[in-house]
Image: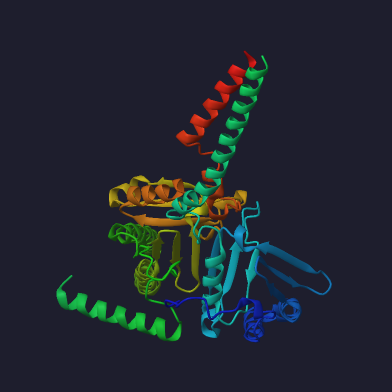
Length: 177
Length: 247
């Protein structure tokens, strides 16, 4: 997790499938369970082969499963916290589990992105897209006010027009009397 | 401890660290957060728990050591009453056996302290901790719902406190899962908790939204209802005109 430059060179939209190292990782994890190997490995094997990611300009969707299909969609702007968890195997294989948390009630992560070859870049990309990493706080407020001044001026002009119209009406009415 | 002992200990510790970074890919450097704009003058500060946190962890270590030792001695003495030589041998074996896990635990405390990093920028907070499993949490101040500071009596003695930062959501079992709760970030064992809390709070106050993913693009909601004196003059003029008209 050394300092990364910018995320400009990283294009998440090209990611649709996890890297093949993920299967290696799943095998390692399953082997660790010894007797449980077939029971642990089979679901993970199918998960690996059906796992699909779609990154668009607003959000991420992720789907997997054969018998029980699951699909998750969330928008970048709803991301509240990003968790990167790396165990020993993850670090050896250059992987990480990037978990994304939104404001929903579940205590676990809403989405866990696994098997990305460059997890740091993925994390930095998500960070740059999530709420609060952009210009919502601080100096942007003054910018926003400055932008709104033009709109206010229009409102002022409208008010002045109404006043002048009323003045005209009153003068006309005064002339009739 | 004398100086050579400390030297040898720190040399060994460095050796363990280089082994960890080499073979187990444990990062030793502080994490970093990419800046929003290049050269935008954003602050980027990384810190780790205060020295008191190490003392706090070691206190528990020694407490548990003493408790186990007392238990073993009592056990050995009861055996000694019936069979003296067996009791002495057992006591010696216990003492040797306990030494290994104790030194590993002592090392783990130091490693835990050295792998804990907190990074704060103008916009976000990143917490990284862990040796075997490294957990890293990134939260932007915009999303923070509340900040709490907690300090126990022992922590007060060591001059440290924990700052807990929470975002929205999260399940009810957050207390049980300890440090790896997904919707909160725990900055534990820092000496300047009040300062950190105030900094987070001042960042939170600048936020215009409820921190729930509201689409406040560029903060349009701020300037909308802002009336300037010119507006008020124009509105007063209109009122006067209407008043004249109805008379």
